[in-house]
Length: 76
Image 1: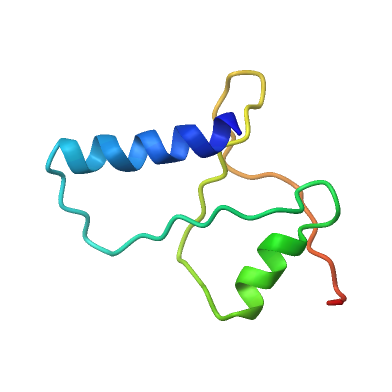
Image 2: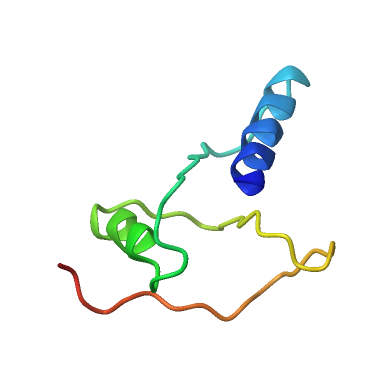
């Protein structure tokens, strides 16, 4: 849940600073990180897409620009 709070705080900070983003953003908070990404898969299945993705998962306190992952190939 710390990652969710970090994302919400980042959005709030950008707004408070008056920063105008060139493109719109969406904040998706999904479930299923431990079971193959069902929440992320459902979001994609509903047509949500983006040019980039930020995942607020702590990794030894460092920024990681890419990571292995998995999305389930079946939908219940």
